[in-house]
Image 1 (cartoon, rainbow, N blue to C red):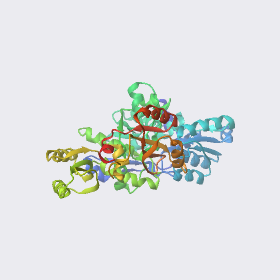
Image 2: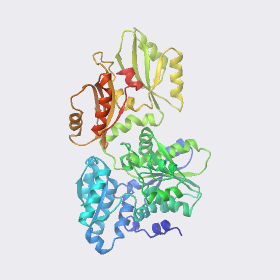
Image 3: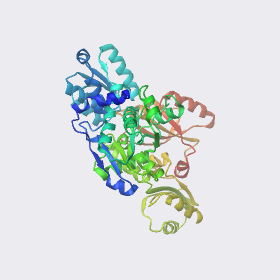
Image 4: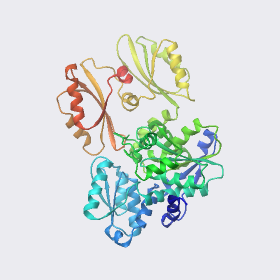
Length: 502
């Protein structure tokens, strides 16, 4: 018997979850995809996440001397709740280090469970480094979020439950991937017991450490990770998890932020529960795979891994879900600036539902329109663009343009004639009280700010779109200065949406 399978069978998870989490039907997804879809409801655990399994199994294995020392963990949120809950159940002192950017809903939940919470740094890596130092100084036992055999075995019990609950025609299980603990555990036990069942990991396309590591044949370190699905925003997968995924995982898919938002909506329609972005990852991957592997028969399962969603993030999710479902196309269209041109343009659009329409006079010759249109099928957006171009309209499809969807759609107002030598950049900065003021202070006053746009999306990091007036002779100095700031940034001066509308 494989070592991980033995560990999973001996895991202490039933002590805290005496009944398996449900494997519920997803009727709306089933109807739309034309195959039976089931959701493994890890959002229904006491901490609304699967993390309770690995955390409890790790702490339950400690001997009396280790329990007396207490436990410590670093976490973005869900692991912290699992550790705090397990420690409280077992009567063990618990200290949790979280980043200052951790969502308040997760911080308060950890405190309510009786853990000591320490907020350090602006991201998980800083919190983890601080926790390691505290563990060394205090003698407390570290409980890793994913890279530990007992933690992996605890998560693997999900795979055992699915095999007992699912019908015999089970074709594939879709698993969200961050550091790889859940994917490694589920894949290891499923492949040992039912090798024909595919186990497929799913990652955001901007936090794809596992996919890149599998492609490279060794663990890679990402220079930067995405900010939306914070529960899986890991720069390097685990030393224990990687070889298990390398051996057992069938594939690792990448999905976009828009696809994740659409999956959150799908989950809500079938369960009336709002999954967090990492919790909906597997649904997004399942939809992608079903579209590309339609000929493969059988039931498919997505692990709904968590539902610790910050309420303020819903605005962002709803904005992006329609594009993720390919039910909306966003266009930048140039029309003649003359009486009646709006009517002609709208007449050409026909009876299509307009979801957004932004316009500002740009010149006396032409106008630029930012327009969103509801579509009913894949590929319809391309047909709309071709039809508009056939009638002489210059048209840019902005549906995949992150700058257009995050910033420009809220800023349409025409170019500023007074702005000279303007260069445009996007930035990410830690989302916590005072962070915007600190960001502005760090920019200094060497170059004039000609444009600025910021929206709070309820995530760990905020997004800023900024314009500077910088003479060509000083561009190199600007690049050096921005590098010293330490904020993730990208030049957007050539972005088509920015060139059309700003």
